[in-house]
Image 1 (tube, one colour):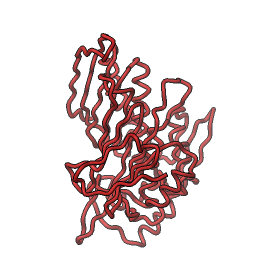
Image 2 (image 1 turned 180 degrees about the horizontal axis):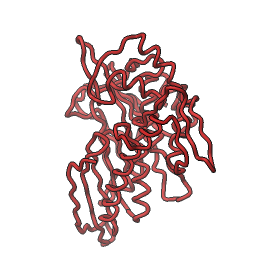
Image 3 (image 1 turned 120 degrees about the vertical axis):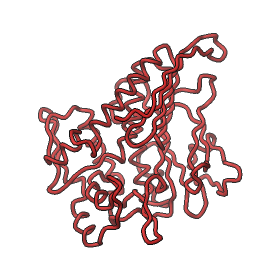
Length: 351
């Protein structure tokens, strides 16, 4: 892992109204092709941030498709793997669950199609339709066979490969939440590109303010959320794309067509509660769910995304930024949402 920069600060802060002192530690890390920012507050904040850095490095080395010795690369190369630790086995099992829940709008076996477009590296191209037709026959997570204890094995279908990029950062957020609890962190935040997790409140007792990027303005915001103990994870076509013959092609591929999703959405933000300090919850958690659903709902489009929010059986809220200039907020965020003046968007709340 290339370390972008690491800054560990040990500052004494007075928490509002109690005279109690706590330690602040922060770090900036480059991993998983993005800049990650970590802030922790508590007696063991410095240790928590250092361990977070180690945990992120471990996760990148296990989940990356571009590292030859990673778990994912080994599985794709050999077609099967045995004796997986439960958390990684469960991550793949959860990915299969999300594929079924979204009727295939999220599917980790999209990897060969991503390769064809060049999104795994930087050699972008528009594949021929015949090539996509052949590759799409391999996109089906139902073909992944999984056996539990004692083998704890995963076997891919013939010619399949997986890409965990659609859930890796969300899963990393889940793992950082667990690190924070293990180190008795009282307040904290981690930002992994468009993936944000906040623990508790800011040290002054106020909510964390989380900005949702304006897909039409690189330096602007489309909305602001006031959150505590929550995940807010965004997917948008603006994150990675290329242009060819005057047309823009982004990296969020529709598994049904093999082409970048054309759903009328510019971005999808999924918000859910933190997993909580109860150690009975098992990784992966709500961070992984938010990551998967932000991708899937972007593929679905506004109408299907809202239907899924209402009827899908999962507990989360949404902020949708549409191509026609609207920001759509689901009812659970109504009192935690702030419009951005002069953004050019109209705002509406749905229930």
